[in-house]
Image (cartoon, rainbow, N blue to C red; front, side, top):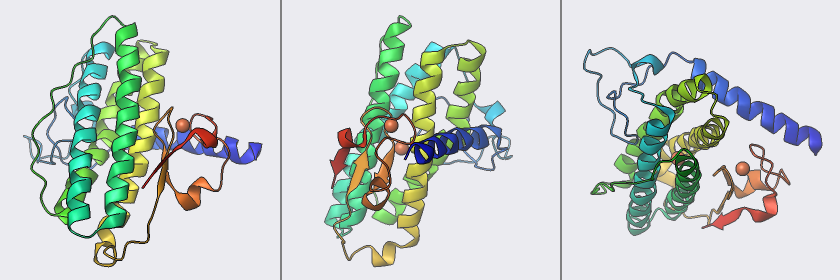
Length: 236
Ligand SMILES: [Fe+2]
Ligand SMILES: [Fe+2]
């Protein structure tokens, strides 16, 4: 079990490393706020990590806190919409991801306070569209965070030797990669998603790592932060 845990940890570090090193082809606006719909960069060229507008580590965490708080609120609305459209499993996934974003926001807030700041979020009004469109929007938001925003913020935190900031950024980035993957799988299989299977998810209360029931059964400690699997929150 130890080796599997270690493997998971190495894999998570690798994930972050890959995401940070990637020259990404996503096309999104170069702004601090995350979870925005993808738009072409002003130059028309695909954005890279270098194009992300960054501030100090404190400013970056404030922006990330705002993004995570908005993602939480948005995914809860998307979950309601998915439920209303008969996509029970997709609704569960949105609720699980919303829980994870709540964990990330709380982690960011703690470091913000430690750095002398005050976490504040401006929750944008969101009008949910169809579940297919909402999934597309969610994939874009998560991909932006995974490939561009968090890698850019990590570079600053690392240069500043802000270990607490690096940890909370790492936790969020790894979880967002998982969310993007699960949303993409749901989007691909949406036609069959109306047959709800009663899918449940588990969310790490420390880092927000989000897994299916099948994956949850494979570990006793969070593969990312080593928190006991027993403390994971079950979301349905
Ligand atoms: Fe996420
Ligand atoms: Fe964790």
